[in-house]
View 1 (cartoon, rainbow, N blue to C red):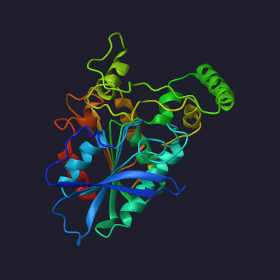
View 2: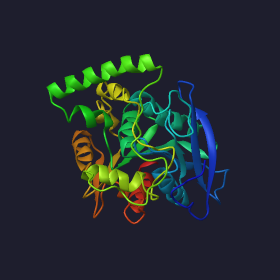
View 3: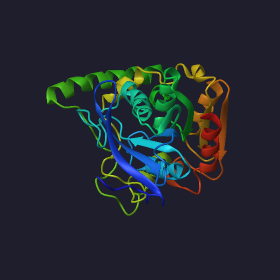
View 4: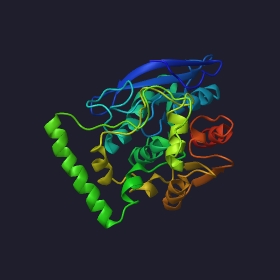
Length: 313
């Protein structure tokens, strides 16, 4: 499927690829390389993960095109149950599998003769920031991690509720499993329209308005990214701590990139406080959360290039 939200950078090649994760599920990805790359050489490589519920044709293609132009081999991918990747039923969220898929990307890149398997890093945008960090906690082949507008999806729900609200959520979700079993399929309620809107509806809360300004408009809309996951997917997130071993990434470096106006800024600040050195929190001026999805005048590509070239040695 086409529908990339950004034109491919001049001099960059994009090739569709397929590979499997350790569960034997087919992953659909795109491999970006400089058009004049000498395939007899070996190059540093990056994996770029999409925002939670997003696909490779959205923010990842913006990052991959620019970073491939700067000399990296870059892999983007659709998470399992999403986009062009395998997995049934569709729109299931699995923190375990979503974390695993970063390591599956490392597997794939390390088998390419033009990739130096000792120089592989990852970038996680939004929810993929949490999954990328989670993968790096145990997969030591990931030599450096950068997150942009990071969300910790396992904390996003649980940590926003008191004990009473948490118990009520568990009760409701547990009973939804009965409904799903009776219906023969899990409930899924998409957030965003099938076709792009011209304007965002009025009267939304600020965060919902922000999501709509990217995912529901031509700016970022893609039919494979309708938003949300099956209702009972929340049970898995309530029972999983993505960043429980964040300190164990050290001595490999972590870069947290966040907009100064991002509603999600606290996720990066909290993770930065818990991570061990070497680490850096880089604040982009005049940027909200979604600006680091696609705005090339806000995404700090010079900073990302320096970070990975300095640390993938």
